[in-house]
Structure formats: structure tokens, C-alpha cells
Image (cartoon, rainbow, N blue to C red; front, side):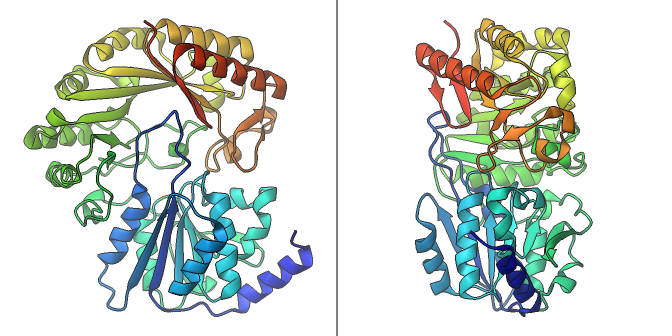
Length: 452
């Protein structure tokens, strides 16, 4: 336990410690424990994008070492990092790695406070450090990179003066000084064609799923989702750049490409460029595609494209069939449009409907009806346990949602419409159902095969 006096002393020490100016960089990411409900290997793509950007920046005195971790104890990792003696540490923080990396950062910072500790990724938010388990770690983290990290991290490495005052000139960061976080103006979405490719630089592992991105951002602002805090996508990847990226991904021997866009059909220019590059490269004739679609925006061109893919797997993120529930999280559902497009999607792809357990404003009876409705479609089903994300419900839910959630896993314990006992009972119901149906259960979701 860290006493308030110790925290104040640490804060004063950090504010007076001169941060190093060298360019010896440690980058760290950690995979979640292999979830039985998600057996495919997905690389830590965000970390590798940052690595590619830094290595391509042309710093003459740069030294980079990457820790792409599957396991390991915090003390052992910290010893390894200290032996490398970095000037800057960049941690890729997700809900499964945040606590672990806080512990590593504390150990490395204690060895030498002059090292600059930077957290990036979805969990790198001031709201996370306001949670009880993590308050003490604010003394160990100097800077948070909000949303996009490639250009920001290059600018951090370029700085010779890394004082808090100097870093206030960066876009899209939160700086810890004087016991509080100061957020600078947001950084516009990057031009993806201008960012170096970790696939072309051969920085990624071979096999598993390839990660493909044609645009960033989302036109919607659903409050349960991290996408909802990003600006609407304006810049898309050129078809020529996408063709080159698909060729580089193909050289990595992947089984399929995971499209990490907000949706296949939420940016038409990006979709047209993807279709053109796929036709030129023939990539998807030989491999699969995993993507999300927004059912109300499905057009014939999307169906034709999916039909040309060797093995297309489409997720339909409905979250709920109940518009009264969806209104609480700034989402809607068009029953007629869904019915019109669902059968067409099934004709050209394997389809999984996705719903969320524990949304604010939902309740056990309504959720059970949603579950039965989804199973009646006789397709695969994915049920996600509602998670209170730091850029989502954690900061966007009104007080009447009465959120109570685990401060480490961020899984919802109770909220408007859900008592703790009711939510636990529904989790037990899904555990039993997934065993009965031959599906899989994981820490955060349940997957059900199609009903035969």
C-alpha cells in the first residue's frame, strides 16, 4: 500500500527529475491468455505499427528492443528491461495487460526515475488511473498516448527535452504533472498510406491471422465501444497501397485476414479500394476474410465481394434486438432491414450474430428473449459480457446507469436493469448452454455454433 505522503513525495521527485534525452527505446506488448472462445492467433499489430514508425524515422542513434510477451513475471521482465537500460519505454496497454504493465513500469521507474514511461493503447486513459487498484501507479507513468500512436511516439523519441512543459506541445497525449493529468488537443487521424508497414518490414510473426486496415475511425458513437470516441473516417488507404499490403501479408503465410476496420461497409471509398486490390492480387481467392458488417448498410456490392472470398466469416454486431435497450448506448436496430439482409449474407458467408450481456437498461427477461431470437436464426452466435471500457461506458454513462464493475477486468457486475445476482445467474445459464451446444466459453464471451 502506498501512503498519500509517499505519493506526494514521488510526484515531487518526478516533477524535478530530468528525463533522459537518449533514443534507446523499449517497446512492450502482452498477449492475453489464450481464450478457448478465440483460438486463432492474432499478432500485437498496434505495437508493431509503432515499431515500424520508429525504425523508419531515420534516427541515427536509435536502438530498439521489443518485448512481445506471451507470459512472464513482472519482476523478471523488469530485470530484463533494466539490463537493456532504455531511455524511453512504450507499453501497449489493453485491459488484459494494463495491471501487469503498471507493475513492470513501477519496477523500472524505481530503478531510474529519469526514464520516460509512455502508455499507449485502448487502456491508456486517465480514467483507468482513477480506479482504486491503479491510483498509486500514476507516479510511474509520465505520458499517455490517446488513440493513434505511430506519429506521436516518433515525435516523443525525437524530443531532446522531454520535460512535461515540452511535451505539452504534442498532440493527442495526456501528461501527468502536479498530481493530475493534462490532456493536449487530439491528433487528427493519420494518413494510413504514409505509415510504414510492419508486414513489409517483416516485423510480424508468420502464420495465424493477418491484420488488415483500410481506414480508421467510425461514423457511429456507440457508448459501449472504443470506436465511439474516434472521429468519422475521412482518409482511406489507396488501392495500390492495399495491394502491396496484401502481398506482404501473403508472404507471412497467414490463414486469413482479419479486417480491423469498424465495418466492411461503413466507408464506401475504403471498400471500393479493398475490392479493387483484392481483384488485382487474388488474395481472398486463396484465403479467408473475417470482418464486421453493419446490417442496415449492406448493399449488393458488399454481397458480391463476400461471395468472391474463398472463406468469408461475417460478424453482425447487433448487441440487442431491443431498440429501447440500444437507446441507452446510442445505438439502434432496424428489424425490417436486418431481415432483408440476413438471408443474403448467409448465402455468401458464414455469419455470426453478436449480442451483449449486461448492457445498462437491459434486464434478464429481455436478454433471454434476445438470446432465443438469436438462436432461432440458426447461425453462429457470440455473446459478449459487457465491459466498461475507459473510452466508453466508463466516462460516457450517465449516473442513472448505476455502473458497478470489476476495476481490473472491467467486466460489468451490476447496472441499471441488472442486479449482481441476476447477471451472475445469466452467466451461469450461458455456461450451461455453451456446454450443451458444443460451443466455447472464455473470460469475456461465449461462442455458439449454428443450430442444426
